[in-house]
Length: 440
Ligand SMILES: Cc1ncc(COP(=O)(O)O)c(C=O)c1O
Image 1 (tube, rainbow, N blue to C red):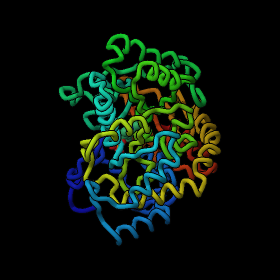
Image 2 (image 1 turned 180 degrees about the vertical axis):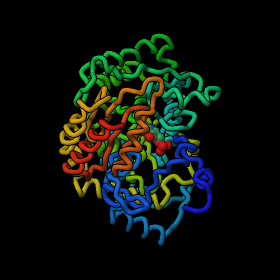
Image 3 (image 1 turned 30 degrees about the horizontal axis):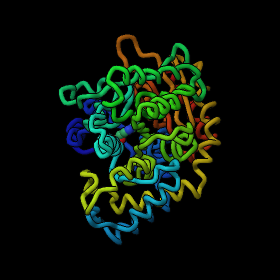
Image 4 (image 1 turned 90 degrees about the vertical axis):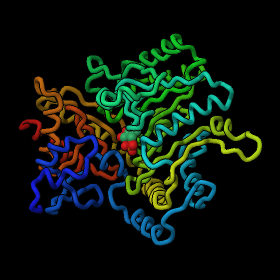
C-alpha cells in the first residue's frame, strides 16, 4: 500500500452500489482470475460463488475467449455500425438466434444490461406506434424487480432505494405488479414455489384500471435476481403470458442474469416454456470478458418496423459501441464454449447438487429461507435487530476472509457459481459457510 491513507487511496474511483467509505477502510481486492477462482493480491484463492456478478458462466479466463479477444484486438480495434458494419456482427447474431427461443430471431446489440432494458422498452413503445397503436404507452414492471440503472430501468424496477434518490425523474405512466415473494407459504421451497400463480392476475386489475389500449408492455425477470433470487411460482409466468396475449400487450423477459445457462437452458424462456416478445441479455452473453448486451426481438415486432417505403431509418436508437468487435469476438468464443463444452447440460445436471448444498445450511443459525432454481440460489438471514444488512455484510466479509466470494443483497446471500464448478467445491463452500453462520 502507498503512503496515502486508506481512504485517500480508494476515494478516486467512485465505486458502484458500494459504501465507498466502508470499502476504503476495509478493501476486498482481487488481482487475478482463472477457472472458478479469483486470487487476492497475496496470491490466495477465492472460490467464485457468483460468477463475478452473475457473468462468468464458463469460468474465468477461458483460453479460447482470451485468444479470440487478443486476435480481434490485433486485427481491428473498432468498427462503426451506423451505416457501416463488421460482418462478424451478423455472424454472431445468427449464432445467437440459433439458441434463442423460436421466433425471436433478431438481435439489437448494446453494452450492458441497463442498455438492453432501455432498448427493449424503447422498442416496445416504438412498435406500438409503428402499428398504429400509439396510445399503448404504459409500461408495467414489478415490485422488487431490478432492470438496471437507466431511467427506464429504474422506473419499471421495483427496488425502493434504487428509485428513491431519483424519484423526481422516473418515467410517467408506469405501474407495478406485486412481487411473488411469499415466505409465509413458500419458505425453503426447492425449485419453483407452489403458491402464488394467482399474483399474475393483478395484471388483469391493472388492465381494467387503465384499459389495454393504453398499455404497451410488461417487463419481468423470469427469476428476480438482484432482489434476492425470487423464483416464479408454478404457473405464474404462463399466466402472465396468457393475460398479455388476451390484451395485446408485449411481454419482455429481462434475462440479463438468467440467459446463457444459469437455469440449465440457454434462456429462462426455454426453461419455463414461456415465450416472451422481447428478451434482454448481457452478463453471460460474453461471460463478462468484454461488456456487451443484446436484445432478442420477436419476428412480429421486428417486421412491424421493416415495411417502410424508401430508405428511412427504422429505429432511432443505437450505441457507438453496439457490436463492438472485441465484444463480438468474446461473445462468439464464449457461445462456442457453452455449446461445445455442454455447459447448459452441465448446469442442468449440477442443479440438484447445488440445491442440496444450499439447503444443507437450513439449520444454521439465523437462516430464515433458502430458495433456488437451476444454478441460481439464495440463503436469507434474519436481520440484526434495528440494523438491516449488517449481518449480510458480516457474512460477506467473513466469507471473503475464508476464501469464498458470495453476493449480498441486504441480509440475503445470493449464489450463481460458474457452471463449471464441481460437487466438491460446492459442498466444501456451503460447509464453510454453515460454520461461518455459527460465528458471525
Ligand atoms: C435483471 C437485470 N437487468 C438489468 C441489469 C443491469 O445490467 P448492467 O449492470 O449490466 O447494466 C441487471 C444487473 O444485475 C439485472 O440483473
